[in-house]
Image 1: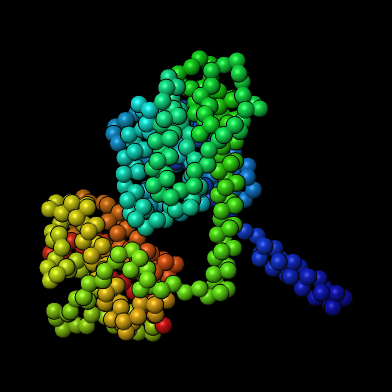
Image 2: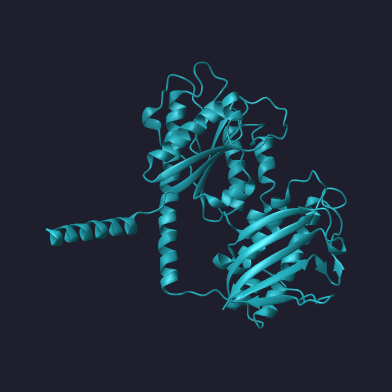
Length: 386
């Protein structure tokens, strides 16, 4: 009896182990909108429903911040969480929704994407599938608006998923519709319930198409990742620096009774400020004398200094780096300043660009009343090396 029970338990555990190995993680798709009166929001819900009908796929619905914080939004829209530009890199696919403003996307969505330069330079959106849906009061300019949005997505290297002729089987031809071959739209100013059921059906089909593309690409990337891992493919950091025109400065020398780095148990500990050519780049207080763009330049320079010191710690060979463990950014700011994380992205994006997967790190950002030699930023870094 005991022997039979033991065999049964082993069989159960083996079966569980096999299932655990073959089960893939969910595909995560973001539905990101700007909506004032709720028309685009209703389309977004249909998009999300279509996404979640695809197996092992999760839809997250968020909105971009309003340019005018006093703007009155639809009650359901107001409850949506607000997205940050940095989080776009965390999703496997993205559906973008906006009302049509003068044959273009809304000013609020356009303002949101104006912050995407760090994502563009680090190329984190390349290869991610994206689709666009819209709501137009008069119906005029909807196709031009979608195509103009495609230009932004194409600049980021995203894979665009159009609607083509999907959904025509359920199209109600007796009432005006806002549908296009580029993406679902709602003719918001027409009579009857809007969006119409036909428009919502097409939005749902569009969500399914995006989910299918996102899941397929994710599975392909997983296979590529497994192959790369099994072959122990190595990236030459020197080639990465050259290909991206990144020139490391001469590692700054200590100006006190300390060393530029220490190594303990294969961990390298480094602290640097925004020193460039012997002078502090963009000195002063962020939010007062120093603008956000100047602070980002200073942060980028500080991280260059960190990597230059790290190269010395590695005996001149950055390929010895196994992992960026943590970055901590200290920022000299006014008391009310809150954009520390956005400034720190300059350092994080550079690290990810140079070291790839090894550059993914834990991070902290801290505001300070002042910093040494009036630097706007100081970065503390911990790396693991061979």
